[in-house]
Length: 142
Image (tube, rainbow, N blue to C red; front, side):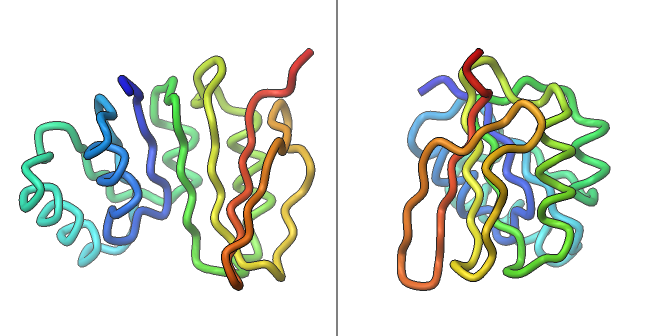
């Protein structure tokens, strides 16, 4: 998998690091918390993947407007029940970050129901794991 990955709300970086360990070419990690940014760097070093990962201390909103895509996979694992989730997804849908035939994976609580579409993005699959949902988006087929 020679994919470029964007891990938004990266936390410890586990999602992006997992993608790298499965063959992704590179991963950009976006996290605002300085302690977590350091943890991501440490985790990349411990897994010897530090040459493939870039940690960016930015808000997700700023990252969406300033990073250069395209990314083949965009991962979002925001804190549950964020009130600005729809706004963030709309910004992603209006951006050029997602590559042609790319995938967005959004993790959220089962109580939070994301929209069917955001800009050019449309929901095409979802999975439930207890109280956790994974909703997948891709560019709408025209």
